[in-house]
Length: 151
Image (cartoon, rainbow, N blue to C red; front, side, top):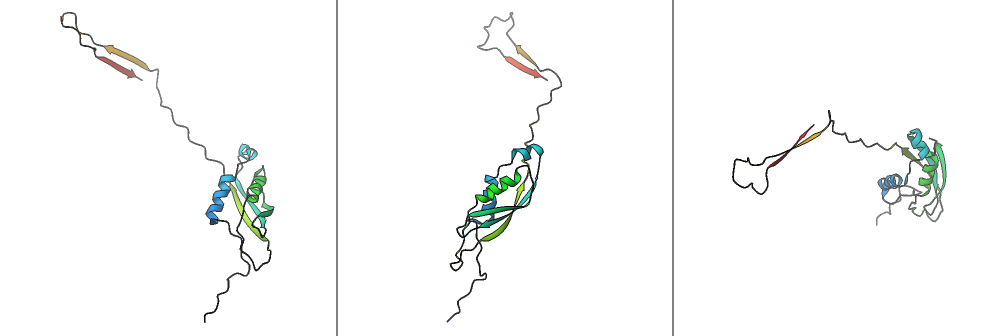
Protein backbone atom coordinates (compact mmCIF):
# COMPACT_ATOMS: atom_id res chain seq x y z
CA UNK A 1 0.00 0.00 0.00
CA UNK A 2 1.37 3.40 -1.03
CA UNK A 3 1.39 6.43 1.18
CA UNK A 4 -0.81 9.31 0.10
CA UNK A 5 1.31 12.33 -0.88
CA UNK A 6 0.64 15.48 1.08
CA UNK A 7 0.39 18.89 -0.51
CA UNK A 8 3.57 20.90 -0.51
CA UNK A 9 1.78 23.96 0.85
CA UNK A 10 -0.61 23.96 3.77
CA UNK A 11 -2.56 26.97 2.45
CA UNK A 12 -3.12 27.17 -1.30
CA UNK A 13 -2.74 30.54 -3.00
CA UNK A 14 -5.23 32.07 -5.44
CA UNK A 15 -4.46 31.59 -9.14
CA UNK A 16 -5.40 33.94 -11.96
CA UNK A 17 -7.11 31.92 -14.76
CA UNK A 18 -4.59 31.60 -17.59
CA UNK A 19 -1.52 32.37 -15.47
CA UNK A 20 0.83 35.35 -15.40
CA UNK A 21 0.61 36.07 -19.13
CA UNK A 22 -3.19 36.27 -19.00
CA UNK A 23 -2.93 38.59 -15.98
CA UNK A 24 -0.51 40.88 -17.81
CA UNK A 25 -2.73 40.85 -20.89
CA UNK A 26 -5.80 41.75 -18.81
CA UNK A 27 -3.96 44.67 -17.20
CA UNK A 28 -2.64 46.03 -20.51
CA UNK A 29 -6.09 45.80 -22.12
CA UNK A 30 -7.91 47.54 -19.26
CA UNK A 31 -5.29 50.09 -18.19
CA UNK A 32 -6.00 53.61 -19.44
CA UNK A 33 -3.20 56.15 -19.23
CA UNK A 34 -4.44 59.10 -17.09
CA UNK A 35 -4.65 62.38 -19.05
CA UNK A 36 -2.79 64.33 -16.32
CA UNK A 37 0.12 61.89 -16.41
CA UNK A 38 0.11 61.94 -20.20
CA UNK A 39 0.19 65.74 -20.24
CA UNK A 40 3.05 65.84 -17.70
CA UNK A 41 4.83 62.91 -19.46
CA UNK A 42 4.98 60.84 -16.26
CA UNK A 43 6.36 57.29 -16.46
CA UNK A 44 7.02 54.80 -13.69
CA UNK A 45 5.73 51.91 -11.66
CA UNK A 46 2.94 51.79 -9.07
CA UNK A 47 3.29 49.05 -6.46
CA UNK A 48 0.05 47.86 -4.88
CA UNK A 49 -0.81 45.47 -2.07
CA UNK A 50 -4.23 43.90 -2.51
CA UNK A 51 -6.38 41.39 -0.65
CA UNK A 52 -8.22 38.48 -2.29
CA UNK A 53 -11.11 36.92 -0.35
CA UNK A 54 -12.24 33.28 -0.32
CA UNK A 55 -14.43 33.89 -3.40
CA UNK A 56 -11.55 35.17 -5.53
CA UNK A 57 -12.59 38.85 -5.50
CA UNK A 58 -10.24 41.73 -4.74
CA UNK A 59 -11.71 43.40 -1.65
CA UNK A 60 -8.99 45.86 -0.61
CA UNK A 61 -6.11 47.71 -2.27
CA UNK A 62 -3.33 49.78 -0.74
CA UNK A 63 -0.66 51.76 -2.57
CA UNK A 64 2.89 50.96 -1.45
CA UNK A 65 4.79 53.00 -4.05
CA UNK A 66 2.98 56.01 -5.49
CA UNK A 67 3.43 57.71 -8.86
CA UNK A 68 0.77 60.45 -8.66
CA UNK A 69 -1.03 62.34 -11.45
CA UNK A 70 -3.94 59.85 -11.49
CA UNK A 71 -1.78 56.75 -12.04
CA UNK A 72 -2.42 55.43 -8.51
CA UNK A 73 -6.20 55.62 -8.87
CA UNK A 74 -6.05 53.94 -12.30
CA UNK A 75 -3.88 51.11 -10.94
CA UNK A 76 -6.33 50.57 -8.05
CA UNK A 77 -9.25 50.53 -10.49
CA UNK A 78 -7.65 47.88 -12.72
CA UNK A 79 -6.59 45.67 -9.79
CA UNK A 80 -10.10 45.81 -8.30
CA UNK A 81 -11.42 44.29 -11.57
CA UNK A 82 -9.33 41.11 -11.16
CA UNK A 83 -11.01 37.77 -10.39
CA UNK A 84 -9.00 34.81 -9.10
CA UNK A 85 -9.62 31.09 -8.67
CA UNK A 86 -9.15 30.16 -5.01
CA UNK A 87 -8.73 26.47 -4.19
CA UNK A 88 -10.44 25.28 -1.00
CA UNK A 89 -8.25 25.42 2.08
CA UNK A 90 -9.81 22.66 4.18
CA UNK A 91 -13.03 24.60 4.55
CA UNK A 92 -11.36 27.67 6.06
CA UNK A 93 -12.08 31.09 4.56
CA UNK A 94 -8.65 32.62 4.06
CA UNK A 95 -7.74 36.16 2.97
CA UNK A 96 -4.70 36.33 0.69
CA UNK A 97 -2.46 39.42 0.59
CA UNK A 98 -0.58 39.86 -2.68
CA UNK A 99 1.61 42.55 -4.28
CA UNK A 100 1.61 43.69 -7.89
CA UNK A 101 3.72 46.12 -9.92
CA UNK A 102 1.86 48.10 -12.58
CA UNK A 103 4.09 49.86 -15.10
CA UNK A 104 3.05 53.10 -16.76
CA UNK A 105 5.01 53.73 -19.96
CA UNK A 106 4.30 56.54 -22.37
CA UNK A 107 2.90 55.31 -25.68
CA UNK A 108 5.45 55.39 -28.47
CA UNK A 109 4.77 58.11 -30.98
CA UNK A 110 4.54 57.01 -34.56
CA UNK A 111 7.21 58.40 -36.85
CA UNK A 112 5.75 60.81 -39.36
CA UNK A 113 6.32 59.73 -42.95
CA UNK A 114 8.90 61.89 -44.66
CA UNK A 115 7.60 63.96 -47.51
CA UNK A 116 9.47 63.93 -50.77
CA UNK A 117 11.90 66.75 -50.92
CA UNK A 118 11.31 69.10 -53.83
CA UNK A 119 13.94 71.58 -54.85
CA UNK A 120 11.58 73.81 -56.76
CA UNK A 121 8.24 74.01 -58.49
CA UNK A 122 7.03 71.08 -60.55
CA UNK A 123 6.37 71.56 -64.26
CA UNK A 124 4.40 69.34 -66.61
CA UNK A 125 5.05 69.45 -70.35
CA UNK A 126 2.95 67.71 -72.97
CA UNK A 127 4.29 67.09 -76.47
CA UNK A 128 2.07 65.98 -79.28
CA UNK A 129 3.38 64.93 -82.70
CA UNK A 130 1.30 65.20 -85.81
CA UNK A 131 2.20 64.20 -89.34
CA UNK A 132 3.69 66.92 -91.52
CA UNK A 133 1.54 68.77 -94.05
CA UNK A 134 3.65 67.50 -96.94
CA UNK A 135 2.49 64.01 -96.33
CA UNK A 136 -0.85 63.28 -98.01
CA UNK A 137 -1.69 60.33 -95.76
CA UNK A 138 -4.37 60.63 -93.15
CA UNK A 139 -3.12 60.76 -89.57
CA UNK A 140 -3.52 57.58 -87.60
CA UNK A 141 -6.34 57.29 -85.12
CA UNK A 142 -4.30 58.81 -82.28
CA UNK A 143 -1.14 60.85 -82.55
CA UNK A 144 1.68 60.20 -80.14
CA UNK A 145 1.54 62.09 -76.85
CA UNK A 146 4.38 62.36 -74.36
CA UNK A 147 4.20 63.75 -70.83
CA UNK A 148 7.38 64.80 -69.06
CA UNK A 149 7.46 65.82 -65.41
CA UNK A 150 10.37 67.96 -64.27
CA UNK A 151 11.10 68.54 -60.62
